[in-house]
Image (cartoon, rainbow, N blue to C red; front, side, top):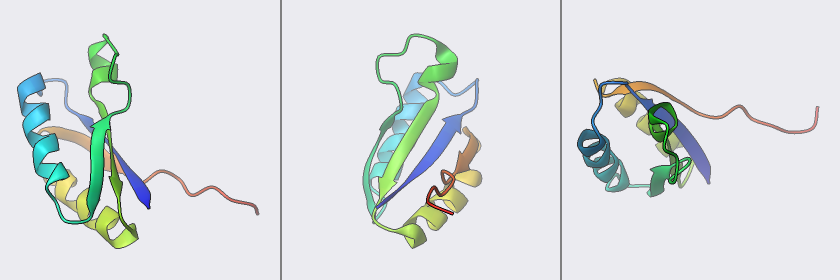
Length: 84
């Protein structure tokens, strides 16, 4: 399992964010999607989302898909952590 982190643009309404996240959630290999901080009140924090996906290939496809969506400011995989 891996995560994809994504941020909506400032002008993306709550309704548009919900619609895009529903689309993401229905993508094969996406296990769940949600806000990083569901109770946040600051708009900049409310635009931060994640998607938990089954494997790296799904993650790469999702990053590409999100990158072509006008409502998305950025989408990325978190940096790999491990022992050197």
